[in-house]
Image (cartoon, rainbow, N blue to C red; front, side, top):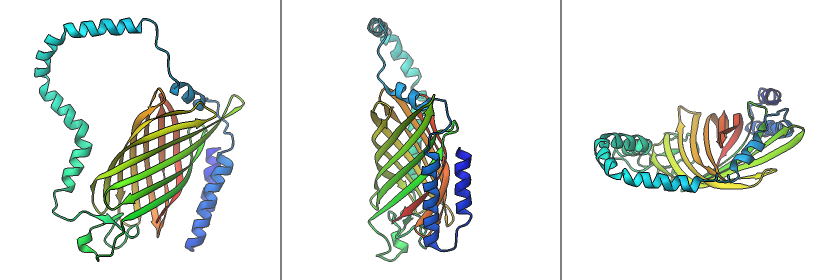
Length: 307
C-alpha cells in the first residue's frame, strides 16, 4: 500500500510545470493522495496501535513491591559509609559523564560565542542573499530582517509494517531565540479486521541556544498527547533539534525527543532533507517513534511554507 501511495506522488511530482503556483497545487494534490489512499485501512496485522494503548496505561504494582523497596532502602542505608569512599574514587568518571551529557549544549553554545559578532536575526525569506534562515545584521541593511516568522507543513508517510500516517506541523520563530512549535500525526491500522486509529501530537516552547546564519541548535519542553480509538494518554516531551541550511537551496532538520506518555517511556528520532523554491520547500525523510518500546513511523514526504 505504501509503495503504491508513493508511486502516485512520484507520478504527480514528475509532471510539475515550471509555474510556482502549479507546483504548489500539485504538491498539495500529492499529499491529498496520501490522505485518500494511505489513510485507508492498511493491510497490517501487527496491532501496533493496540500495543501502544496497552503500554500507556498505568501498570499495577506487583504484591510485595513495597516490602522489597523497604528492604532495599534499609540495605542502602547500611552501605552509605562505604559508598562515600567509592564516590571519591569515581570523581573523574562523574566529571566525564556530566561533560558527555551536557556537551550537546555547551559545545555549540561556546562555539557560537567565539566570534565577536552581533546575534543573527531572522531572514526575510529562506536563503536571502548572505543568509540561511538567519542573517547577520552587521552585513545587511537595517530593515533586512523581521522579528517573527512562521512555517507550516503538511506531510504523509508510512510505517514499515504497513501503517500509514499523515501529519501537520506549525512553527513560530522569533529573532530573540524563542520558538513555539506543534505537530499532530494521524495513524490508521487494520488490526484483525478492526480499524484502529490514533492521533499523536506534541507541542514545545523552545529556545535557540546556539545559532549562526546557516546553523541553529534548539532545545525545548512541552506536552505530548495520544487519543483516538485508544484510551487517551498525556505526558511531557523534551526536544533537541538542529537545523542546517546548506548551499542554496538545500536544508536539513534533525530532531531527537524523549519523554513520557501515560505510564510509558517515549522517544522520537526525525530527520528530513529538503529543497527550497522561494517560500516553499519539498522535503523527504524519516520519522520514527517508540512508545513503550513499540515502534511507529517510517519514511515520509511533505511540503513546507516559510512566511
